[in-house]
Length: 448
Image 1 (cartoon, rainbow, N blue to C red):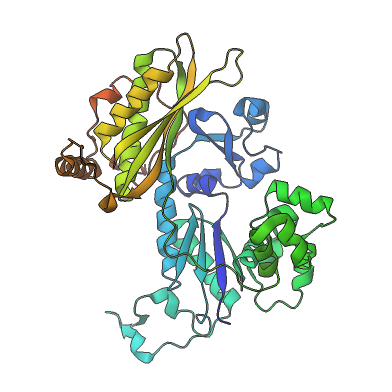
Image 2 (cartoon, rainbow, N blue to C red; image 1 turned 180 degrees about the horizontal axis):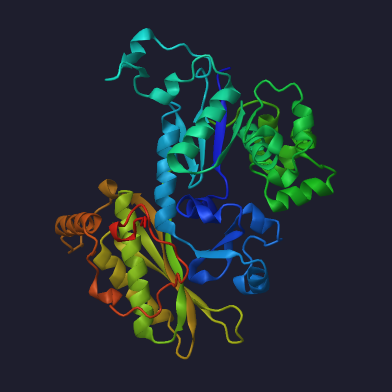
């Protein structure tokens, strides 16, 4: 088989990250909240069994939290990002090709790996005389193993090295790998790993998968399919291609072909260039003054500039927006787009433009709950079209931004722009956040 995809998905990722450093949370109901501790964004299986829905406001489940003594955590994005990096690094040792699909998912190419016999020179003896495999050790351990056995080894190693539980679905297309992963995660008989590459009962398997659980089929598409008489992935795999093309376009046709074991999607080694960058947060407390609003937008503009430079991009347009709560009587939303004469990633220019935009859309006596910046018309920074009348010393600005980014990457006390303010009473609240165990020396696990 030329193509074998394995989808590795971390189980209840945010909750599992918390459990790695707090084993007392195992087998207990745990939920993780969004910014400002507003909504539920992650649930353990035990919490799901209590019918706590995804995205539900935390105040709506306050009684359940008290009644069942549910553990509640604020989002700890620094910890989650680092744990994700560790999982992906572990997975990379098991395949020559990997596509990091999201913070907790990755596609692996396992074609030609299982059953492969390594060359004798691929081994060496350690100091104790034991026979060891040369790098990458994990790939060499695939010799004479089936795909399912290899998947089990991957699963065991990720758990051992990072503490993270994962489910693995293996198939000849990405869509079927997603299906296999769904079944591996939700059925105890598969023990976390399901291989569909040689499955003789593939139709029985597809018949158990709901339409909304198929990769690429959203809620609206699932509703349309159900109205047309489709009930499961098996039904969709047998759909009339012409009808699917007319109703769902090329994407729908590809989904059908993938369910029929005909690959339409390759691994993406180089993700497509970003089309926009958004930085926005809900405030910890509502903002009324324009001074505080300008502080907040300056913080977000500064972060947007950092993201631009991380990806070696420059922005041609900035859009700033403000909004009050949508639940109040006199709600207000407004936005404004600002075009740069020359695309830029200079934080000083971004802050200046953002502050100017806020001055123009600000309204007195409004309690603003959120603001943000959206950067559009992104271009590579080395391909920026210069402006004949541009008076900014671009090379000097580039050197300044490089130095600031370098200092901030190395220092625990980053350089901040004066416009960002010092006393940020509006800042996002994380009242229940766990320590950043893996990235902050002052928050390491303490053994007593």
